[in-house]
Image (cartoon, rainbow, N blue to C red; front, top):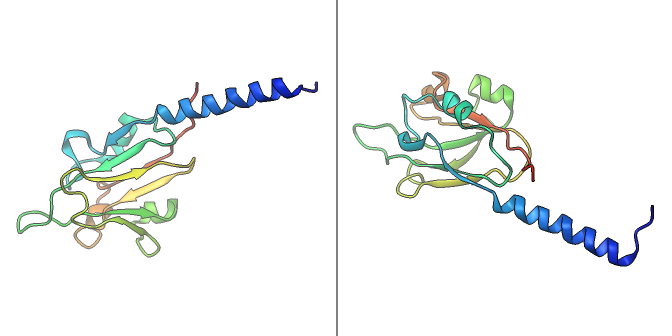
Amino acid sequence: MALNHAAKGSLLLVVVTASLLAVGQAKTIVVGGSEGWRFGFNYTDWAIQNTPFYINDKLVFKYDPPSNSSFAYGVYLLENLGSYLSCNFTSAELLANSTQGVGDGFEVSLSRWRPYYFASYGDDGYHCDDGHMKFFAVPWPHNN
């Protein structure tokens, strides 16, 4: 079925409007809720309880600066599932250093449909190795 010029324009308007509505539904989510990003909290459980995540949602990592009584935290994006499971930071991307999560926190946009593997390398990798300071998120398209 061939569409005339006016019908094509109307269809394009509907598609663009639907896309804008999907972007408008993005949420800003503080990782860990009121607990923030810290050692001793299970972020895998937190992620399971807070799914689904959607494309264009923003995750905010908030944490205290390093001190004599607390560890230095950071946020890494691990390359793949294997790196996530083994806490291998060799090809990981540092998203936020130990001071970037202070105050309002550091924001990461889930801009594409793909798995995002997050972890902390704090205490020479122990924060990830113990299984707590890591989680993954797979954002889904919005259903309008």
